[in-house]
Image 1 (cartoon, rainbow, N blue to C red):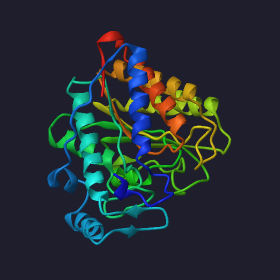
Image 2: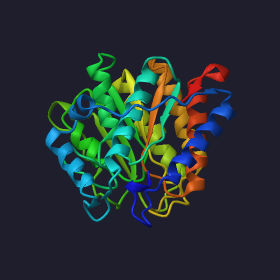
Image 3: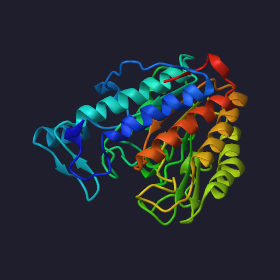
Image 4: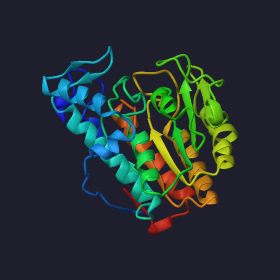
Length: 313
């Protein structure tokens, strides 16, 4: 929706086209059937499990008044809350499809992204926390309680971690460039109270590439997720760690994403998790976005040992 984006902002509609093409590429490579279901906007009940009604009304009011800058990075326009409700709804649908056996890899190609949004604060291009809303939907439906969120965006998902920081049934695992916005995600941040030990952060130095990225996931974060034994796995799929991305300084390539995704797929299979849902976060070079989305879809399908019978959505 053009009304969500001011001129020149990196959060632009073309990102959706790039990811959509990448998902199709990845499914075709794996020989998987691709389906594109109609997206249903998240309703008030779904949103208010995470965000108070007063916060939603504040955002709706801002949109009705024509929008503007919420902070130095985050813009709201006349159509932004329409887009945000669709993004949250698509992420919920992806999570439900993955856990319900309707999709082996379900990809919500959405904008705006969500992992910087806190319960009552928009930030970092994010208005609603899509992945948190999906977690709450799975729990409300009695489909899963112990859930893992994999976040490989180049920026730490401070909003997601804050929402679930004291939740012992939510494992959050992240790689991100350090130092970089938002300045959180130190390895010492491991959760609070009964949740200590369920949050896992690995900061990567500028210039880090596939080797450091894969080492963090394969040797630290995915083993932690396996030990946690989640009933569902959701991915905050940001692709701005790619070497071509204009907003950060890591040197990850599509091959690095594929390696991690394939191992994540194998981990999910070993845990008895039959499907993995992804929701788009960052990633602002269109070519890198398409290539990386294709790599993760194909990698996940391979790791989950799908072959020709799987579905990407």
